[in-house]
Length: 113
Image (spheres, rainbow, N blue to C red):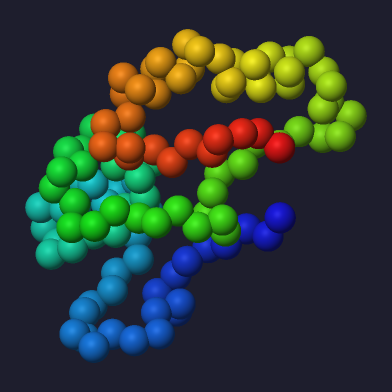
């Protein structure tokens, strides 16, 4: 799987002539008081304990940026890998998500492949 990294060079059009400043994604929540806009991934927003109701828009998850857990072929049938699958598909995890996933903030795939 190819890893994608989005940078300012990917911007095709900037009709408002915004000054785009690239920074470490973990620093953006700390700088919001000093900037007009910030683009932050959902995982960072969650980790920073930010109020999601203050966002201007929410990201659309695209396949290229979805986080996928994989194992080496030799470990596919291992006890620990199966334990991860079982935990992910457990009723307890589903209940946790129901309680914690306010406004369907996390995009959770229906199944594991």
